[in-house]
Length: 71
Image 1 (tube, rainbow, N blue to C red):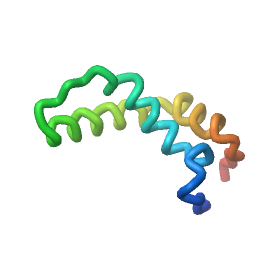
Image 2 (cartoon, rainbow, N blue to C red):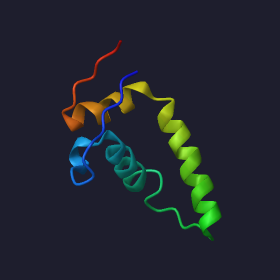
Image 3 (cartoon, helix red, strand yellow):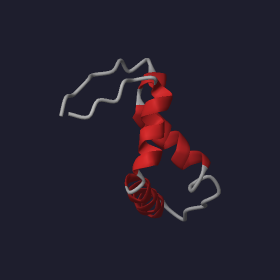
Image 4 (cartoon, one colour):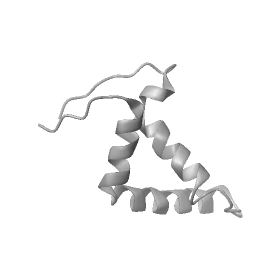
């Protein structure tokens, strides 16, 4: 594994921003949590579902324009 540090002012280069954008616009868009704990549990559950979808994760990397290298 190789780590690349990305500048904080360039969210378009950070695939994690794509994941959060996906979560906010899709499964969490209309979720009305009663408290912060419920929201955290719901977000964690949806994050785990996304983690089990390799093609979706690759799409976030592809959208960022960063090269994907499998070593």
